[in-house]
Image (cartoon, rainbow, N blue to C red; front, side):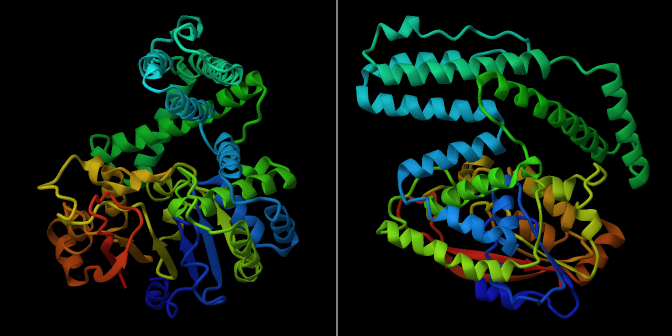
Length: 451
């Protein structure tokens, strides 16, 4: 598949190459070195960005590789890496909740059906806090500890996780859910008005509400960073939100965690350890040997960390390296968003089910909803830059309708678009990310490109 993608890239009329959905950089690593004057890797994951940033410079790459040789192919190593990566990348509260659910699942297996009712009630209480109203149920174990016999270690783990969660939530309630101040409301109004004026968008246009919402979310995210940094201090843990402020040793540690998670989980999704990936620990360590060639290939590659959805939809929100900056004819992008389910009946379904149910991308840590796919297509439908895009032709034919049929365009815009629509190439492949129950993992991957 990579050979086909590499052969389809435009090398003649473009000198800047960007992968907004960087991931494992499968195309970047396979395209000829020096084929574009500028190469840019972008990903929403701070860990993956740190990994590629360190590997793109010989000054840092070899220190990273030495640290990677200290890791091993084991579930313990994987879980440690996941926890470290998530505490740096994610909402700190969500990572604590994930750890709690995992612990309860393990205890449920150990203690059998006796635990089911007890733990379901406990989970309901943990997730039952009312953040919007500023109240939270006090989390206590006294009413459940007497019903089951837990080891001292299990009790300790439960109490620690619940204490961290309680601290995080109370901090969240205290700081984040306060009503917006007058100054904050004025800031949102001013930024939204400025963007609408710059783009020539009417206040009653549907796009206006989207821009206002994204301006609000950007302000909230800024506040949330401070909140969870405070939560991390209160719980005695470290938390980071982007590797730029980290020391070189901290960034190496994050990159090591990202590599372990990516290389030891199925499809790099990071959801669970896959014991079938390597037969021996030596086989895993040999993947690290190959990084010396990667260092040579990535030399000089630039790295950004921007959420891919914000990269395309955050125009005007002070994104220095957003889509509008790079939307020119000398730029080539390879876009590989999480996939929608292809149009087939091999899973025994009839008709179109609920949108989320046939979105296999949900298996990944960062995935797009159906609506986000559609907003993305509206953004790139008439792009000036060259774009090569891969996905499935889903049951609603979303990508086909926007990129080939000009869906949503009218009048002269539609006529102009249909004179030169996107091209499509189908490719038979096999996937390991499947919802099939009959083990038929063959797929038709679709490639669309506008040049």
